[in-house]
Image 1: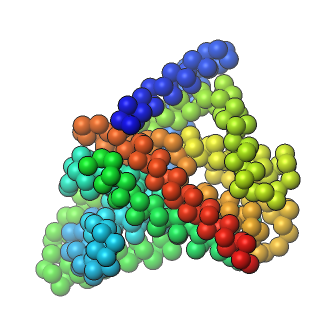
Image 2: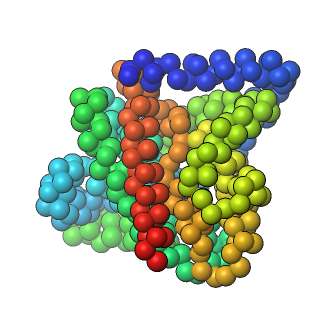
Image 3: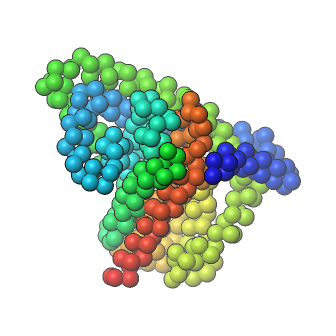
Length: 173
Length: 188
C-alpha cells in the first residue's frame, strides 16, 4: 500500500512526459504554459486566503474556537470523532482557503505524522467546497429548486469526514 | 454566506477577546495571520505550478481524451436517462476527468457547460435528476493526487502516505452521495 502511495506520482510524470514525446508534443513549452496557469491561480486565491487566515487566526487566539469545540464535543465523542478536527469539518464545505489554513495550523501544532495531522490531511484531500460548487453550478443556469442535491451532497461530506478518521486509524496508525 | 462566516469569525473573536482579556494577543494574531497567508501561498506555489505544468502536457498529448473514453461506462451508470453521445455527456465526462487530474481551472468551465447542456434538455427552474446527480458528484472530490495537501505536508516522514487513504475515503463519500441522490430521485 505504501509502495503505491510513493510510486504513483513518479509513474504519472514518466507516463505523461513519455507519451507527450511519443505524440510529438513540445513538452517543455506545454509545461511552461501550464505552470503559468498555476501561477495565476495561486495569486488569485491569495486575497481570500489573507482574509480567512486573519479571521481564523484571531478566532483561535481569542479562545472562541476552544469554547465552540467544547460546546459540540459531547456530540462528537458519541461517534469517536476527535474534537480537534471539528473546526476543519465545519469549515471544509464552506471555504477551501479557510480549510487549507486550518490544516496548515494543525500540521504545525500536532505534526504531519501525528494521527490528527494525518486525519486532517486525508479529510482535506478527499472532500470539496460543497456550498461553493452548489452556488456556482446551479446559479449559472438560474435553477431555484435544487430538490435533494444539498441533502445528498452533505451526506457525502459527512461520510467523508467520519471515514477519514476511521481509515487513518485503520491504515496509518 | 461567506460574508456572514467571515464577519462572524472576526466579530466573535473581538468580543470574546474583550471578555477573556486577550485583545492584545488577538491583534497580534490578526497580523500574523495575514502575513502567514502570503508565506503559505509562496510555499505552495512551486507544487501547484509543477502540477498544472505536467497536466498541461497531458492535455496537449491527448492523454486526457483517452481517459475520457474509458470513463464512458461510468457516466452511463450514473446518468442512465441521458441519450448516448450527447453534448451534455461529453461535457460531463470531460469535467470528471479534469477533476480526477486536479485541473480545477479546466473543470469548472466544463462543468458549467454541462449544466447548460442539461438545462437545454430540462427547460424548467426545477433541477432535473441528472443535474442533481452531476452537482453532487462535483461537490465530492474525485482528485487522484491531493497535491496541495501533499505540499503542505513537507517535513513529514512520508508526505505521500495519505494518497491511498484519500482514494478510499473519496470513493466512500462519492458512493454515499451518488447512492443517496439515486435513492431520492427514485422516491420523488
